[in-house]
Image 1: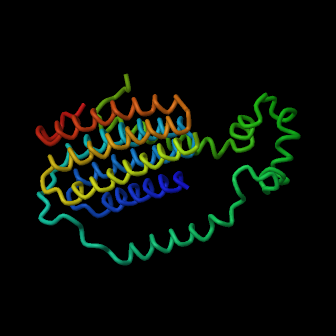
Image 2: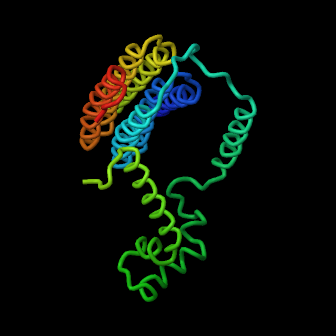
Image 3: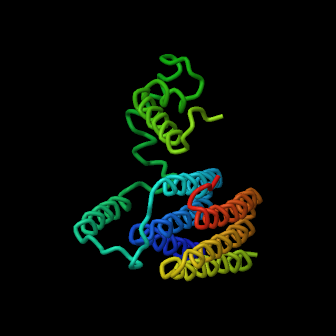
Length: 179
Length: 91
């Protein structure tokens, strides 16, 4: 009960920060609201018993992202904001609200956490992976086998995204190597 | 014992609510200094909330996260302040 109270307070904080990030006219203030948002999200990860994800979210989301935003901002000229909040674009609000509604309708249809009858645990694809992964890929870990062999193209796409992010970070930092 | 943990979680929720109240200053400003201090206050509140959650769950690993947070919070304030004064040179 009190855990739900804590989660509700955290969600209120996170949503408040997110709305601030979207609406604040002053770019520096929006970056600050985004840093606070990352802090709130990582407490949420802790409450969900995932301290490693929370640690990563705090270090990357609040730390590195904020520094990168500030570096990008320092290469621009920001005019003084003459009002606190930007005017709201109602078409965007309708689009985002519709998307949130769609997800909100979908989430209760998901199977409960650690439900043994969930379709993922007993599905045809999972059984195939578990039965054939060792012979077909010669990888000793089933998760690694799925990521590196069966979904190799997917993982390659993720690697391309990380590579592009690294190049963008270098160009913002105006350096040629990471060291 | 259960009541004690419940009390810890309730206090953590209260601290997160305080952080939410501090968000008003992030919105209203009016100067960047107000916003820096408001984000710092919100961050400090979340550090306390994490420590309380760690005590309630009996997980000392969470305290490491609280430490990282406290350091990051301080660094962020310095970065924002430096940016505000010098327009750049944050590293």
